[in-house]
Length: 354
Ligand SMILES: Cc1cc2nc3c(=O)[nH]c(=O)nc-3n(C[C@H](O)[C@H](O)[C@H](O)COP(=O)(O)OP(=O)(O)OC[C@H]3O[C@@H](n4cnc5c(N)ncnc54)[C@H](O)[C@@H]3O)c2cc1C
Image (cartoon, rainbow, N blue to C red; front, top):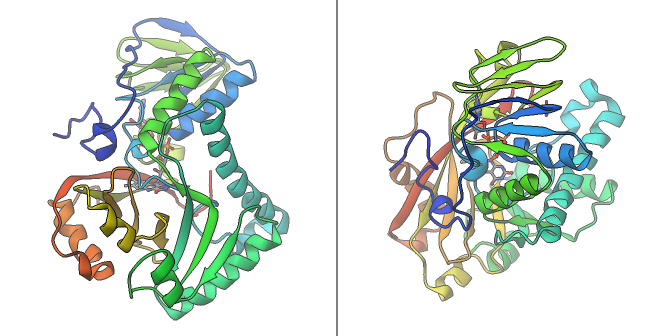
């Protein structure tokens, strides 16, 4: 069952290894920074700020990880999701280089955080971009050159269709792959809940079921929930695709919410998993409405895709994704789908991080 205030009925929620909850805000607090939204943005901002000595309160409308961070494909990939060279006119050479380096650094921060705090989240390294046409095949070469130019610190390999079939995805659907041994995949909800515990140990006050209903701006902003109020010197909005534009119209107008959808099959025989995806890397193809998939720790195919801008989910997510799976893996035939879910991600109106 999907409940508007509990975790969505994903494989992640069913296998989360931290069951605890946090209280609702029912008091008045004074802190340096108030963060709204407990996804990766909110929780990691809280960690960084608490480590620098700020007092932090983190308010989540539903549950920690209820949004995209607890529902996504679990693919931990360098970069910001698309080519940055197209923004050279807007950002200049220095701006493009800075964002490219941030895209690599982000990957390392996640891995360091997992290692330092021993967060149990099924991290597996190895990821491949997959081309589906001749243009993509050329773009893979360009991406390799671009990463080499910034001294990307992990092994990168271009694979032709016959090699990628043997080493990454046993499918005839692709024109080439760029394998990146530094990216990979993980259980995003377990990562986030582990990070929330790290934030809490650093002194961050976390509240669930505490939707912010009003922001009062000023020298000392006030953040209101139904039963509480926080005074602070700065507010961070980490609501992403779930931002109610009325809360902050300026930002609301710059974030386009888009739906994406994921299924988890029943556990597949180990030998079948090795045949479908030898090496168990995460993969994503290079189309705008892309497929992204991987094999989970417990041998499920976790397959994501589709893209909606209407705010309406497909009636039957498994049925909507079935043709995409059949196109990649016609040999798989009919398999039972144990979980299906979707979530909203926020696309920056100008496609740049904000
Ligand atoms: C199906 C799907 C698959 C994806 N796959 C991948 C992938 O494989 N790899 C990848 O890197 N990215 C992927 N993404 C994108 C990625 O998940 C998001 O970019 C990321 O999780 C955004 O994190 P966030 O913290 O900014 O937002 P979210 O995780 O969405 O968190 C926002 C939070 O704000 C809360 N909130 C909203 N309004 C209020 C309010 N008024 N008061 C208090 N709280 C509020 C919400 O309840 C929510 O919990 C995917 C996204 C989706 C939806």
